[in-house]
Image 1 (tube, rainbow, N blue to C red):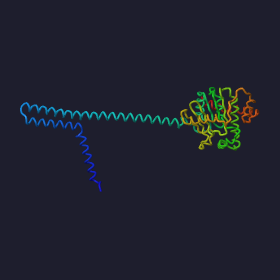
Image 2: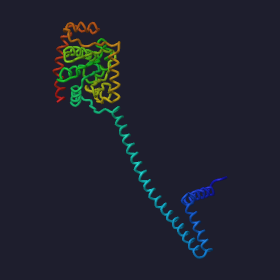
Image 3: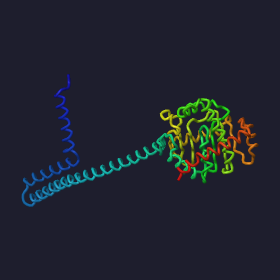
Image 4: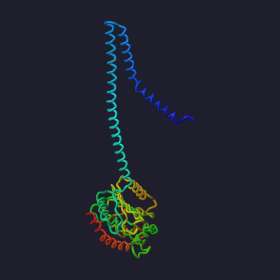
Length: 344
């Protein structure tokens, strides 16, 4: 059976032979061998010669042998210097490639972070988050467009009515108040932190919140160039606020913090995947034929506005409008100072 130490020794012998041939029988070695043999032959001829012929062969042999030795020494020194140069060049090239790869990895990481990691987090709390209100107010002041998607929108309309500088193009996507079943999930969350509130009361409070938004939209309509409202039977449970350069998410679906009135908030920039996804989803809803959509009219009286809503299916009488107007003004008086203090 072949193998064992005999084969190993044979492999070593073959490797040594290859190494010797590489070292001594390459072009430089062959040239040195030829010149040495030529010099030896010339010395042999000088021994058989006399006089000037002998001196000629000795001088020629000595010159050839000296040239061969010089050439060999020069090749050895040049090779060593080339190896050093090549080693330095390769080292610099490797360092440059590592630096390039590191920069590319950093750019990739930053791109992934931009796409999937929020730039700011706002923890869930029992009171309004000062940082969240401050940042939203700053974004609202510097944006030309604002899109809201959520359940009621009453805080959004209060903010839009209270800030001095606001976007001129506004879209609100809120729940259809004629479909109260769409608010069941949020109503159960409301019950988790409101002691003594029944499910029916929690759901009715959400329906009233939408009516409050519709009334507030009418009262603030003159502040906008375009104010569009979309009433959907499939409202988003989380609150989404889209500005020119960032998006804010309030995660009402976060079950770990469902006992907090103000849920976990996240902010992403415009290049993020969530920004692009939510913007497309809002555009889809605003162009859907199955949702109630309208621009808040500027030239209608309160009574005419109520009739306009009734034609769309929202049964809001003028008496109810007056009641919600008072409730809206009270809500704004209570809520706006918290938003404005945070903004300063």
